[in-house]
Length: 156
Picture: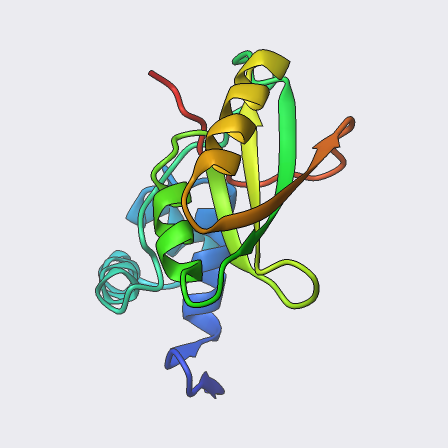
């Protein structure tokens, strides 16, 4: 069997991952039936993927608009030298922030966030710009979502 040396996964593991991405509620029996393996093997493979940190958790896919989160914002941040990690750590605490990325170019980081409306977005941007060590923040508001997978919303 061909293996991926980085995560030491093989074709069976990758097929299990693919199935669980489509439906994380699949039972070990259904996984086994679809892949033509034993239930015990399916169980052991999933547990091993969890142990290695490949499978970090199981979740649902939400429709953000149906839950009232009508605004998606991509915000680019420029931090004062040496403080990027500190700024990113603080930004990551916000429930509205669903992703934070280090970037190359004019900005140091980009974040993707969800808001119910422009008032919430404006309050967040004001907070962001007032944070220590944030030199600049530029916001791009998405007006149409073409593809979006695995979004964690700030449901309270």
